[in-house]
Length: 348
Image 1: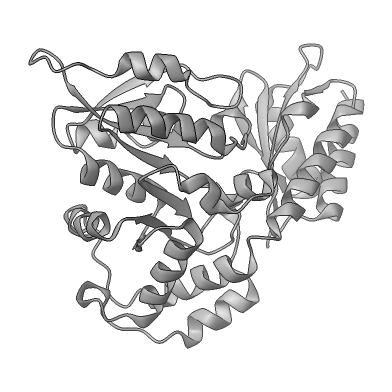
Image 2: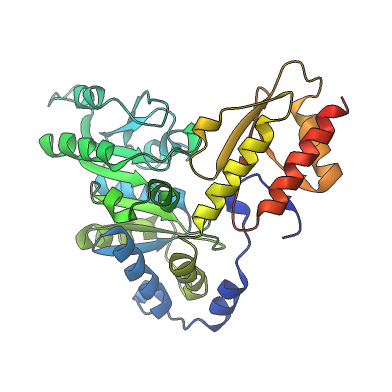
């Protein structure tokens, strides 16, 4: 890459193997169901998640919105974590485009809603109220330091959904990070949900795309919804080819990203003026802060990293930062990050 980029795992460039696969991919018109590479990717994604079928979409946000609009309709309600990606970071699409009402609930330190509160939030049949239809969950949980949530929580959500005839969708943008961190197969998590979207373009390293997986009849409906959102694709096999490489070659190596995140967190923890909670680093994200005694502003700190070592970092406001490891960040880049932060803080 042309920079040392810790802002997100979305910045990853496709690997050489992906570029070769993209150049040589057989293609067809996906709207007619005739792109063999997309068909292969969708079948592979469904198998990885233990579902009947898959649907290639442009992004995780499109996949989540397609799922919500396929499961629910106007005036129905989705119970959702108040700091979840689908509620906070997807432009309010479920409400603005679908008329689906979010019912946000607080989450704990790793992103779980309280099960008793979830059940108590299910609306009874009253014409004054939106009707509960959907529970939205997330794994790993981005706003809680990328925490991987064990499957027993989702088993509890499944039991509530079954008692009240609700459906469950998972935003699994970093599903495979969660599975690798928990040392289980992804399907052990997704067996508890009706549908799941996961991203190919984050830690898995593909340049673009996500896959929505679920039952065959659900995916048939979702294909129509995707079309209504402007997502009918043509010869997109050149994109799907990178996704196939991602699923076949990039899942197990996510453990390397997690190890590099641990290396980074431990290095930062040794620097005076930096605060980091080592116990929260479970996947590929490290959240840390500048102590109040450090005279630099967050913007000055970020700019100093770029000027000194071409290291790019994202700020979270209030002197907080998020560093994300990925395929293009190795032990050497982590060491340089730690050394540069130390140099910057010693100079102020």
